[in-house]
Length: 225
Image (cartoon, rainbow, N blue to C red):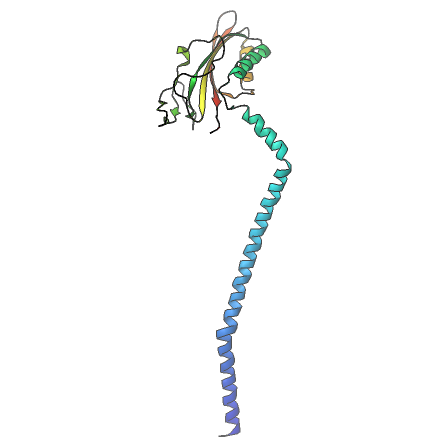
């Protein structure tokens, strides 16, 4: 066999071996390195997101005292117990600041919290949370503020079995105001707190010498379970 032919065969064999090595070893390693690089970049991006969240949490941790004070202030608006003295004080303070005269303040009985997902039309009843099977309390009807006599002192509790979970108490308030702006100022001050008094609905009636204002509103109780 000529020497040149042997050299050519040797070269062809070497090229074949190199090609096979590239196909079976180098190319898979190359693509694996590309996938590893992409995964590394993704991990880096995820770590950056986590670091931003950690920095935000550390900043919030430095404000923990302020946050706790804010939560404590908000908690006073929906207290744990059905103590309504602060509601009566709120009404009295609002009346004093706005130059109106309180005629009556009527507190209704505790009822299960009624979920409000949208504004209600006048006279429309909100959807009431289902009754608790353990107590059998019917919550399909709301109390009628007009049918509740005005107490001399705030009620100390409710009759019958206790209601579990979030609760609401309806209030009916009547005042007399010499001027319309005094009546408006009184309604604005009712929303000032510290106890949350919401769903305020009012009727203003001229009397010739002033204005009679009838207000219906709700306050809330959130016992700890």
